[in-house]
Image 1 (spheres, rainbow, N blue to C red):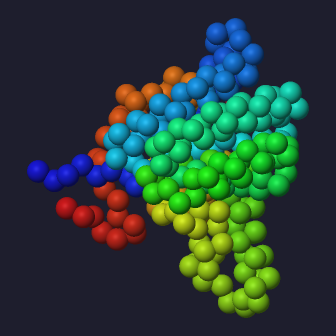
Image 2: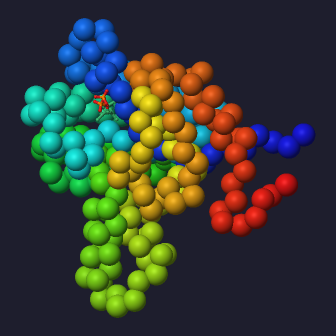
Length: 232
Ligand code: FPP
């Protein structure tokens, strides 16, 4: 029997928090809180099923257009999450990386991010990558400008790869987007060039190990060809 194919790197677009809360007659922030509460168990479930790198879309460059109180709540949730999760990362020896321009975040949140990244940077038991104030087009433009700044006049794909926030990570193999929306929304466009895209109607706060296994089984059934011919 051949071994089940497991993605090395999963990207998750956690969508549907607002609708989940609305269905319960609660404010949107209630959905975001629940969405953060389940993160730990989802990352653990990923590790249990052999996926050691997980990238999560926490706040996009477009999310600044949300009402200020929702932005403040999201930052507050993130701040609390990181404070608590740092201990878990240290005991699991899992690395935290951040993709995005954190210089625009409130000072204390930025400091919390930097502390977590620094404290876990040498760990090798998997990577938990949070996309925070992240936009893929901006990332690619930033990478190209860095290369120009270094005096490059001809740029290769490897050069760009080396300047991405995810330069130390492999490409994303599987994207999971919850809540029925079927688009990438500026999420790691470069890194998802060959990713399988999995969409589920489940809202993010209801996502769990069972849902993850469904996505992993679906992934295992896909025949990835990378532009080549069918691999029988
Ligand atoms: C999309 O749902 C979700 C977000 C923009 C925020 C995701 C953030 C969290 C789950 C919490 C914090 C994250 C971490 C890493 C601690 P939506 O609000 O667009 O939902 P809707 O489409 O139903 O309105």
